[in-house]
Image (cartoon, rainbow, N blue to C red; front, side, top):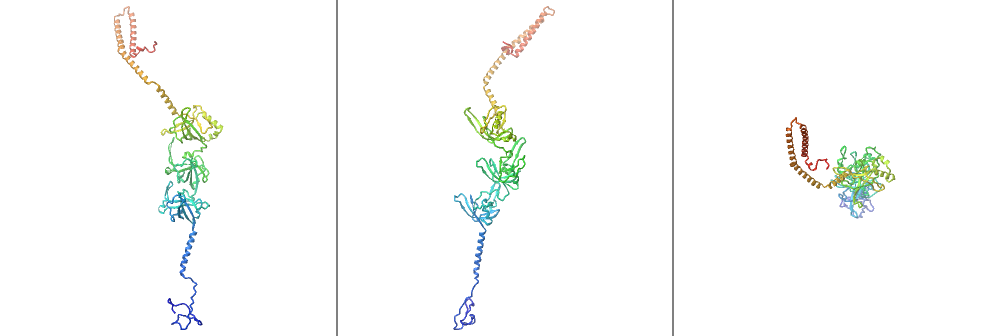
Length: 557
């Protein structure tokens, strides 16, 4: 028979006869037994199950690939999660993706942000102790502007691969990118200075005005007396850093006025604004051996300070002045005949109840080694008996401190240490700390004291009484001169005129041959002499009328 779905493939067999095809002609013969249907065996599965199986195999393969290509999971803590997004923010090393941010949470004390990062398989060696992470975003620093590419792509986490062999999964992220990464070639050095100045992370390092490195870090000393800086010099310039290299602040403008005129010295315009550090071998020395990594150097305040020979141990000295210290400041130089021996470290004031006066103590550090190698070799140590005897001898010969004007325009003072042979003899305690040295006033102060003394003496002179007495004497003299001019002089002139007239008449009456001629002639001579005397007297009285009252000068009473 025929099935609704088409001819059947079943075989119908009788009880004692061979099988026949049930699909043959018209219907089945009557009185035949029911056929037995046996299905064909199926050993090949249906194609419907092949597709899910293939899909399952592909999924398993992807899971295996994902698990096999996944690196360790690490946690990085930051102060802020600015710019970070779960599932989007990438971790990059040299602009290659090495991980993805999985989750961002807060720490238990809410002080920091914990960022869980899934590293890739190729970055599994980044999970070591000295690896550094930071967020790359637009920043403006002393070294320039960085991270501008993140304005479009968004922030990402930068990584500097460490070299440690110790595994680590928890890291503290940097708030600023490191100035030097681990793959940069060069060497790092340590500088110790008195102040940071205008130095910042990323400030340039110069060698002969060529930028060769940068500042990578700084910290304040534990005792608070200085600053320690870490600098990095790139290869191959690190070969120029020797054991005798000198380092100094190259910030700002160094303007000097000396016998040669004005001198302007600076590294570059960038250092004037941003600051910088320079190093070089002293001009009078050969380059030393190449400095090892992390060697410590002293950082001078300027090139002159850095190039000066080592100072050695300073001597603490105090000098008491009894004059104004206006113009003297901390840091003022201590000068010995043009050689800078030290600087002022403190200025104070003290009252002496015995003398009821004020003294101005000035403390300073003096470096005797700056007086030269021969002086260092010939002078005994400070704390020895020979050193104390030498100090006593120098003071007895006139070693004194003196304030002098260093700049007439600004009125700045400095302390001059010199030998004054005419200074008063004093003794010092060579064992005291700080050592007290005697002082002498400067020449300007001495001149001011002398002028003040003269002014005091002049002030004691009674100029008002002298003026009044002189005015009265001049008035009396004027009255006397008027009296002489109106009374004595006219009468004297009349007498002379009458005498001359009488002598003329007498001479005319005498004859030449008269016996009295000789007598008369003699009398005339006497009268002539008398007239001459009277004439001289009249002239003298006319010129010196006061002689009528006081007499002729030189006459004794």
